[in-house]
Amino acid sequence: MAKACALHILVKTKAEAEKLKQQLAKGADFGLLAKKHSLCPSGKKGGDLGEFRPGQMVRAFDEVVFKKAVLEVHGPVKTQFGFHLIKTLYRS
Image 1 (spheres, helix red, strand yellow):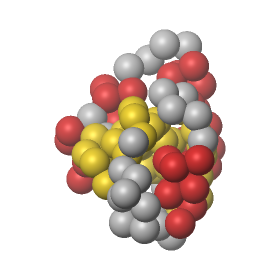
Image 2 (image 1 turned 180 degrees about the vertical axis):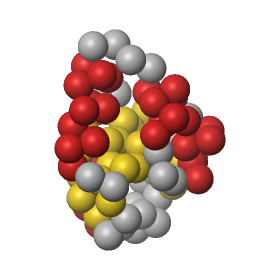
Image 3 (image 1 turned 90 degrees about the vertical axis):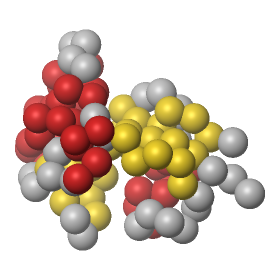
């Protein structure tokens, strides 16, 4: 069965997510931004969600992790929790 490992940053607004994405594009460290800005408890671990399988996360999140390019920052992705920036580390 498929599984993946991803990092994410969860923020309240699309504008905030866009601003963080610009910082990442300029070389900012994903983990440090997650620790500083993410509303998710995973922020303490640099946004690391560990390994998970399809269906364990909300659909919009799964769509990115299991279908989009690995090691690129995707988003902002809107869910009921807020806006995510997602970086899939690997998929198997």
